[in-house]
Length: 361
Ligand SMILES: Nc1ncnc2c1ncn2[C@@H]1O[C@H](COP(=O)(O)OP(=O)(O)OP(=O)(O)O)[C@@H](O)[C@H]1O
Figure (tube, protein in one colour):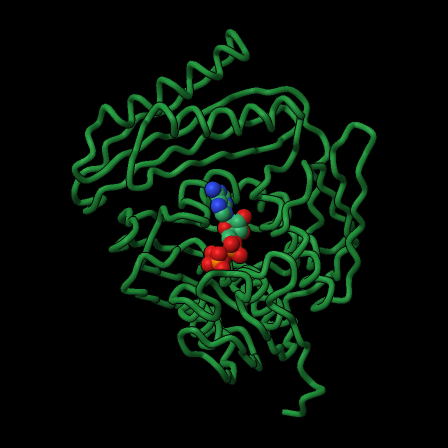
């Protein structure tokens, strides 16, 4: 391959984490454009490919029947030349606590552009730091993605936490002919607040109850009479072998917005703190009438870039992850994102999408 034929993405730009790599590779497969990613995860303490990125890269190699150079742990440069998109059954066992949802983040957009349905089973971490918890993927990403005319079915077979992982999930994806433009502009009124507080392993059920009670109390303090139902769950050993705890809260609004806020128990776990952090974050989104939460922002950029028509999202200040995703999407697809801070303080992100059609159907 001639050096000129690769789109070159600088992985150190802005956030300098794994997301630039994930987005660049997904878009490479969908567009059929070879990509070279340099300075991978340059801003992380241990730069280069970690397990999650390497497993994701090798998975996309298989899905796209791609030629790959640089697919080794800690590699800081990768060349990826895709051929097609093969809808099929795939299995990835990370043997670590590598984030299952981040591997899905890489593969999902690609499998939406396959010629037939796919099933992707991954084992690793379901709830790990700096990644979407599986519950967030199911309860927040899915309804937001439906606005683009796409979806998936996610089965959580077993939860897995740092350091051993051992979680497993199955993702079923039906391809689409195209993505339609998503509009996230009208907050409307807050309708429901719900969620799940869980703990597993040797952690007592009272921990889940602490998270539940504090989260519900905070919502009721701010919006007396507001419906708020947080389920408190102690996961059974066959559903989670190790210690782990976390809470996901979601808010649904009459404008069709679905916002999420998740916290995860680390070494020292205080249920009241986890519940309070999750509810404060969610309350902040609701108070500001944000249509897309701070983590969903960056995850929607790739879909906005590919859709047919003009997508718009009204959100809070853009995160570095989002600005990085925009930069990568612009370089890979040639589309332009327009970012405008409105008098209300909200940020409006607009993109006339590429209108990518599924070339495998
Ligand atoms: N609590 C959370 N809820 C939902 N999504 C989250 C949460 N925390 C992180 N994410 C998402 O996980 C992704 C993490 O991207 P990032 O580039 O940091 O990935 P990474 O591969 O873990 O990189 P690195 O290992 O280099 O930090 C982003 O899409 C971010 O929005």
